[in-house]
Amino acid sequence: MANPGLILLAQAEGRGEVSLLKRAQSLGFPVAETWVVGLWEEFARLNNLPERIERLFQGVFGVRIDEERLLLAAEEAERAVRESYLLPERAEAFLETLKGKGPFLLRQPGEGTHHLAQTPKEALFALKRLWAEVFRVEAILERHPLLFPPSVPVLVQALGIPGEDTVPEAQEDPLLSLDLSEALGERVVVFASRGLVLRIESQHGG
Image (cartoon, rainbow, N blue to C red; front, side):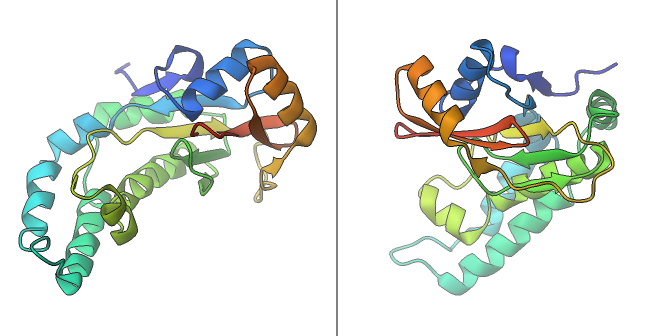
């Protein structure tokens, strides 16, 4: 089977929240089964996205930002990402790795907003939507003058409750927050759902 591009949390490299989740897991805290998706660079290269998106934004950023052209370019950039494809063998391996493990939450590290996916196939679609969202106007302006992000890590978290149509929102857990803060030696805030740690926030980022 081809490499699915899904790296188990314990084996993933990363800073910020990825590092916090890894440390919490290694300390025995009930972190949800989590993977870090490492496919953005290959996906972007195979679909020629850097060059295509660069062309879309020509003339947008000058002495002043052309807001109308920015809106149109951002919309087209999001569409370009959504309509692009992973290698077939990569997509197949991605689906096989997640088989039987849904539902899933997908989000970028350090971000609270997420996409819920009931099945591996829905998770694959949600992944592309998250990638497309890096070309929303707000995201573009936040990282300006960098237009094309070299890396877009995404977390895939299995919730372990197959068959349910709704998933309780992750809520701040004061007890887990206190315990993990003491274990790490720094103040963190833990968000959990049904006893599973899904997100960790730190004053240092994440």
